[in-house]
Image (cartoon, one colour):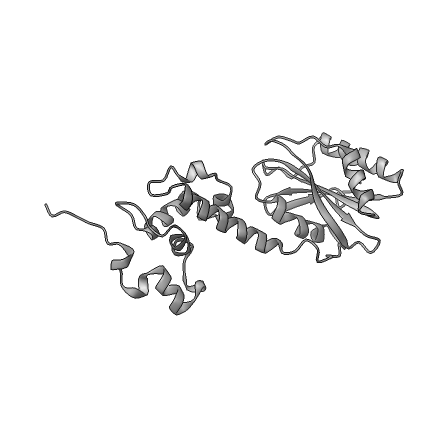
Length: 231
């Protein structure tokens, strides 16, 4: 039986090599697997960089958000992926996420729950654990700043109302919007969600401040407690 030896990327036709293809046709001409192949540079003894990248993406249902949630330890289980390559992949995905976010100081004006969700989704939609964030707004409902108040596990996080209001006073905010994510994908507000909203709203009134909304993020979807009449 003849011995089979895989072709390396260098042995491919020039038009099929990711780097050459990018230089000739631009990044838009490359598949996700080809882009990842450029990041990792090489595959393993039985797979080219493109083939290995294609297999990894397939294992994550070709969902880059899902891939971005995995760890270095998980990626290095693939033969041919060491710490350096895994870090390259995750760093590129994190840069892409931050590019979507843009500058937090563009003074976005919040006129609806959708506006608030658009500001918060890049921070919250991709997480596999729960985090609690607050948007701080001026009198014109423009975002002064946003801040993560706490983070927790899969099922919840501990919120300190004093921390929320202390930051709001420091930033001279006129109103705030609460937000947190549900990694489970459940968009329904829990009793504890309603309770922290009530407690924060009551405390905010004492310093002449309003809680405009509480946004619950689950992936690319959200629920607004204000829209639901729960504030």
